[in-house]
Image 1 (cartoon, one colour):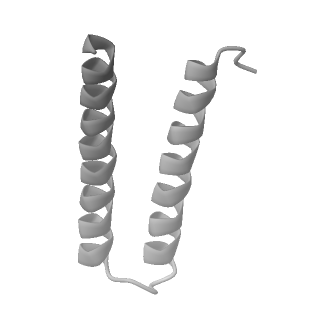
Image 2 (cartoon, helix red, strand yellow; image 1 turned 60 degrees about the vertical axis):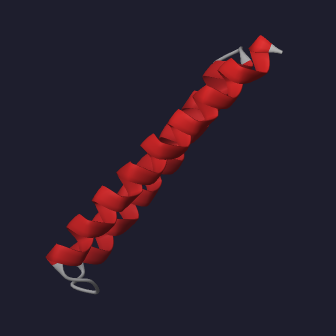
Length: 66
């Protein structure tokens, strides 16, 4: 188990991402959602994680400047 706060945060983010991807794949496999919608949801999820990650990184860098 990670000891530092950063590693715990990264592990939590990775686990939530994998969990959401698994849920989308499960819904697609059970034919609850279509294949095209599943692809769209996966791309949107990746975009959200990358976008908010970038915003968080910029916020951390700006807060160190002040």
